[in-house]
Image (cartoon, rainbow, N blue to C red; front, side, top):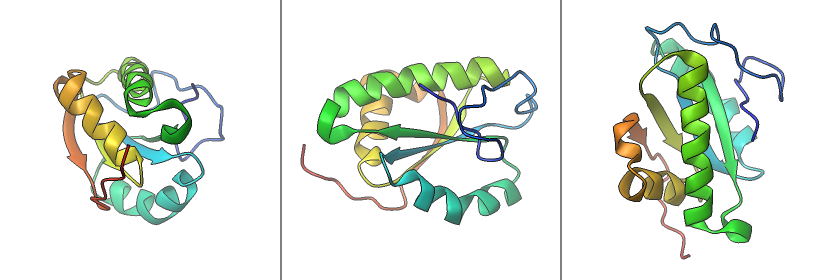
Length: 127
């Protein structure tokens, strides 16, 4: 699992200084191969809204399934929270990442770590 703050090189590990504790990090949840499209259009708007660091989580729903991807997302969220010193994240989902984000929130107690979940696509792909 790699944390990829959008303003840093891919694979660069986060540090405690990645996001000031007063700024909530944002996690893009996207299907493998689609995160670049999401990030290119949204990072500027999110940063303009006063959010903290922006991270991306890519999931392979077709290969691993929604539940397994949501479990990995939970680990990812925990790692981001530890690295940034915050107690919640905002999440933006894209493509099949929407099913993973919703499963995490609804079935894996993700709601306790989410401040907001934004689903601009609102598409529900069949399992």
